[in-house]
Length: 164
Image 1 (cartoon, rainbow, N blue to C red):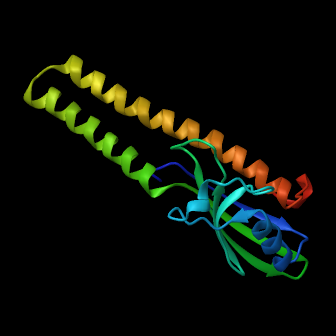
Image 2 (cartoon, rainbow, N blue to C red):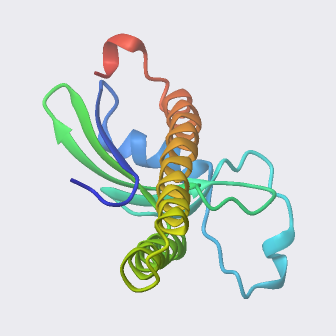
């Protein structure tokens, strides 16, 4: 069981691996956050990240902060009739850290109020708040994954018959 929101998929395409890499690279901007031109808009850029010959690590371009934006890590393998793309959707490390921090904090507060203070009402409030934060995170992450999946599928021109 994964403690953090995650999603994976395997796509099968009739496109060659070089064409898939080319399509992803053509709409991906390699971002250097220290570069002054970072704030400039670029036409037809859907993703930020890195694309290599058989792998990519990208995320959707956003205009405002989003803690639940998935990081897409993909591996492309050639097959006799096209390509197979293995994709993992994960939270960014900073988002994982804060989700883990607040989950541990709420559990410690639950134990503190329940065991040391003997206030079971506050313990239940802390537990519900921690579980609510977790469910909220999974829900929003799942919604953002669907958005990223649709963008990537459109980019690769995948039809329903091409992926499962």
